[in-house]
Image (tube, rainbow, N blue to C red; front, side):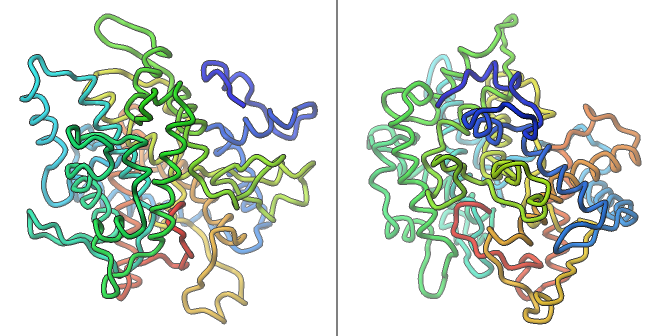
Length: 441
C-alpha cells in the first residue's frame, strides 16, 4: 500500500471516527500527526490521574523549564539564533569537526562542486549512522585511532559510523567508498559490525545483532523501493524523489516535510523487526498497544500509540544537510515531535507509582513493550511540547526564534544526560533500564 505524500495529511482525522478502512487506519498510524494525537490521549489520562504507572505533577513543569534554560544559557548565552537543530551532525562531530572537512574535501575534488551529489553522500552517511544509533549500553566505548579520543553512547556510535563510512564499509563499489548502497549493506554481518565498532568480550555492546540486522534489512528495503532509492538502492537517491515533490522558487526549492516522512516511513518499513505490533497482518514498526487507552478504544487500532522514534531522528538528521548544503526549505516541520527516549524523558513531571516495580528493582528493567515504557514515552512527546512552550515564554521568544528542534538540541537531550550523570553516576543510564534490541532507542 502506497500513498501520495502530498495527500497524506488530507486523510488525517480522529481514528475514533467511524468509517475508516483498515488501510486508512494503518496509514494514519504512520503519519506524523498521529504521534502527537495518540500521545495527547495518554497525556489527557495523566491529567485525570488515570495512568497505570505514573502520577503527573504539572506544577513541577516550571522547574523543569528553568533547569533547561540554565543549560541553554550555559552553552549559548543569549545567542539563541546560534543553536543548531537536533540532528546526527553533532554526534558525528564529537570531539572535533568531521562532517565539514568531508564536505570541503568533496568540494575540492570536483569542479564545479556537485552540491547534489554531496548532499546524497550526507544522506547516505546520516541514515546509516542514525540506524546504528540505538542504545549501546552503559559499558561500550569506541576509541578513534586518528584522534586518540574515546567516545561512548551516541557520540561513540556516531564517530564509529563516520569512520566506517569513510572506509567504504557500507559501499558495494570499492572505487566509490563514500556511498551507501544495497550491494554493500547485504554483505554486512554481525562479525564485521562488531569488528568495525570494536566490540569484544571486554567492550560489550547492547543490541549488536539487532543493529547488524537493521543494516541487512535496509539492503532489502532499498532494493524493494526503486521509486525512492533508484535502481542501485542508495539512500541518497531519495533526493531525486524529494525534488519531484518540491516547488522551485528562484534558485531554491521548498518541499513538505510530509514528503520526507513518507519516504522514510514507507520506504524503510521493511527494515523493522516483524515481531512488532501489526494490524491486519501489516507490521507497524515503532507502534505499541497502550493498556491505559484500551477501556475507551472502539477497535484494536484505537489503543495503539505510534512513536516512530528512529524515523523521527532520521528526519531531523536529514533535514539539516538538505537545507544547509542545497538551500532547500522544508515546510510543515511543526508536525515534527520530540523524540520519546529517556534523555528527553528525564525532565518529566512524573513519579513512577507502581509499588511492585519499585520494590522488586532498584532500577526496573523492562522490555520496550511494557506498558510502563509506553506511558513514559507518550508522556515524553507531549511534555516536550509543553516544556518548549514554557521555555519560550520565559525567554520571550517565538516558535520561529526557538524551534522544538533547537530545544531538543540545547536543553532536553543534554539535560537528560546531565540528570543521569548526577542521579546515576555509576552507569549514567536511564531511570528505567530498557531491554534494547538495538532497533528502537
